[in-house]
Image (cartoon, rainbow, N blue to C red; front, side, top):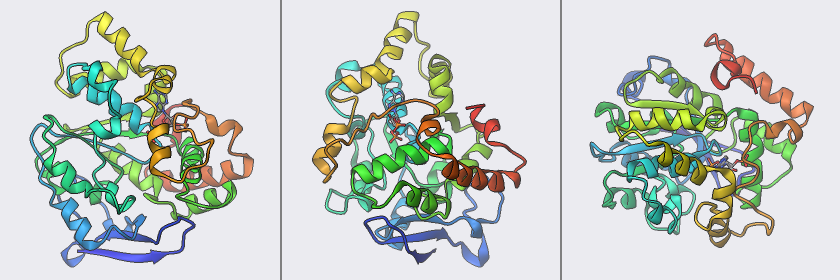
Length: 326
Ligand code: A3P
C-alpha cells in the first residue's frame, strides 16, 4: 500500500521516505490532482509505518471537521489560533487558558512523540464540534475522506527561505536535528528533513487552491493584510461577519507581540517542558517576512533559489507568483 526507503539524515531519529503506492501504479485517486504520484515521496520518521499510514488514510472524519495543513514552520500556530477562534465564536476565555496545540490536535504527532498518547486516537475521540485538526502531511498521505467527503482544508504556505531559517532554529533548539546551518540547508535541498520535499508539498495544494473545500493562503498574505485573510477565511468557514470592534480585538489578539507575551499564545514554555531544549530556545522567534535576508547567507540562498527555480519551471511558476515579492 505504501512504499518506503530508508534515508541517511541528521535527524535524531531513523528517517525514511514514504510513497503512496496504488494498485498497478495508480495514484491516490481521491486527491483531485492528475499527476505521476510515483514522484511524490515524503521524508518522515520511521515510526510512520505502513500500519500508521493506513490508520491515517482511513481516519473517520465528520462533516464539521476543519483540517489545517502546512509544511512545518509556515505559521501553523498563528493560523490555529485564528481558525479556532472563528470556529468557536471568539471564545477568548478558552483561548487564553490553553495552548492552541491542545485545542487543535496534531494528527500524526505520535511519529515525533512515541511515548505520548496515540495522536490518531486522540483526534478520533475528540468531543469538540467542530474539530480543528492540524497535520503537516502532504496531500497524498492525508485521510482519504478529506477529499471524498469534501472536508474543509486550510493550507498555509510560507516562502522556503524563511521556512528553512525558522525550522533550523526549531529543530536544533529542540534537539530534533544536529549539525551546522549549512548542513541543514544541504539536507533541506536534498529532501532529507522531515516532511520534505518542500515544493511538492506546497505546489500540490497551490494547484488545488480553487477546490471548493480548500482555502490556500500564505504566511506572507497574513503578514501583509491579516484583516483581509480573516474576512476571507470567515466566509470560507461559514462564520458570521465580524463587526469592526470584533475585528480590532481579533487583530490585536493575533499580533506577534500579543501572542508572544501571553502565556498560552507562545508555546515556548510547553515545548521546553516536553523536550531537552536549548536554554535560549524561543518558539515565537521573529515573526517576520524575510528573516532569511540577514540569516541565510548568499550561498545558502542560491541553493534554495536553485531548488525553487528547477521545481517551479515545470509548472510555469515563479516564487513571486505564490508569495508575492519578498
Ligand atoms: P519565525 O521562526 O520566523 O519567527 P509554526 O507555527 O508553523 O511552527 O510556525 C512558527 C513561525 O510562525 C515562527 O516564525 C513564529 O514566530 C511565527 N509566528 C507565530 N505566531 C505568529 C504571529 N502571531 N505573527 C507572526 N508570526 C508568527
